Image 1 (cartoon, rainbow, N blue to C red):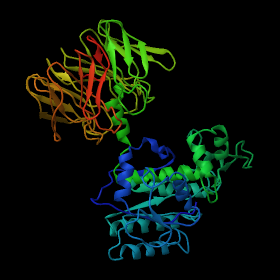
Image 2 (cartoon, rainbow, N blue to C red; image 1 turned 120 degrees about the vertical axis):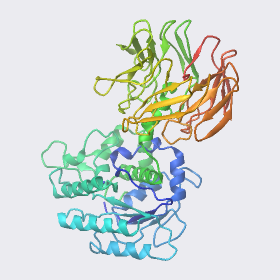
Image 3 (cartoon, rainbow, N blue to C red; image 1 turned 30 degrees about the vertical axis):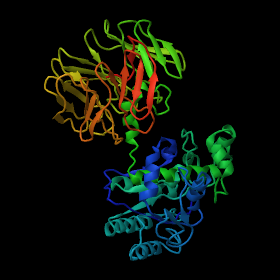
Image 4 (tube, rainbow, N blue to C red; image 1 turned 45 degrees about the vertical axis):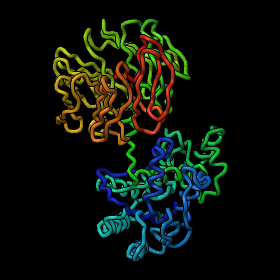
Length: 550
């Protein structure tokens, strides 16, 4: 992760990398990228990409799903020389990282960036076999790239590994690629890991580089020294109706390799563009905490659903009904198995038992965690993608969290008296933070998981109901309250909105999949859901509990 050329990126305003940006085989599922980041990338970025034959694999893959003007992945490009205002200047500058020598690419980059009025803000150069060289040659490459970054601070330079040559883990090529990876990770660089992408099929379970895979996707399946199988053709044969197989069938010839390899690299290229535009994949897990409590089918949208205490049924609009729980239980839907879907679950206050139902298999789990009087507060406190079983004990102000990562317990004292627990990711690190809202004072007290420091602020008064959520789509939980007397939503640093009236119940969630929490109320008297800007839906009856209610 074969012969690639150059790519330059200029961003305004400048974005400082806090950690390395590594685009590898885990970055090919672009359905995970919110569409706004693709749109933003095409608007902000002006890319120049110098390469020869192997490097064309990225563009070949992109063109296979480019579509028509106006479609999400449509992009404008030129195939030679510099052209202003175009998203991608392909084959520009000419050559690659090793042709005609190991330094000309750097001089051509400077020549382009020194041109008056040029608008390129992303630069990528790729290899065409020349990465299988000496450590000193790679050090020269790294040194030249680093100096370009120093001299052109408003441009983003993308490093790259060299294509596979069939020599495996101990081969020189892998050692040189590891040299590049180590430098990029240690120095917070941007890396398109060309070699890693072509080391895995879409299932991502086997590292074919370790089985002596080459750039054509051939590998040694039985260790006898013969490249007897091809991971790309094998995967297509096993998944003929998949979207990737369909894209590969419409893809042009992929230089030196299989069409599936080109598709994966084209998709990884868009992941890279989204990252450079500001997309943070950590926000995927963060939003899973914010929204997953009522997304029962994993489509990225909160579902309209209620739990009926009188009969223990879960009614999920357009999906069905499940009997789970008894009168007196507290519904605690969340993603307990990291499958991207919320599971119906209840907490039984009488004995502190959690019951989680898995509709796909009919299986269930039961865990004893808590006691009478505890408030259930499930959330992803250890950032492993699984909702953790957790309770807040008001009389002690104690939080007791059973971590799904290692089944260990985490406890802390945070809160007092009549505080309301309001966990959320307030510091944008992917971990749910322990937090409380103190109604009598209108104060929020947040224990940040990123540095264990305290964040506090006054926001709310009297009978306000806390409704923290991610209202601006930045992957961070926002402090907010809903005022029952007037129906006003007060969202810190964002604004005030009137939606609802006395007697309504505020509900949290993202009901249209735009990664922004919506303003939603449920009206108990008639069972109507009112979603700002989307409509009204009748779902539920008197006595039901809307799922998504704080």
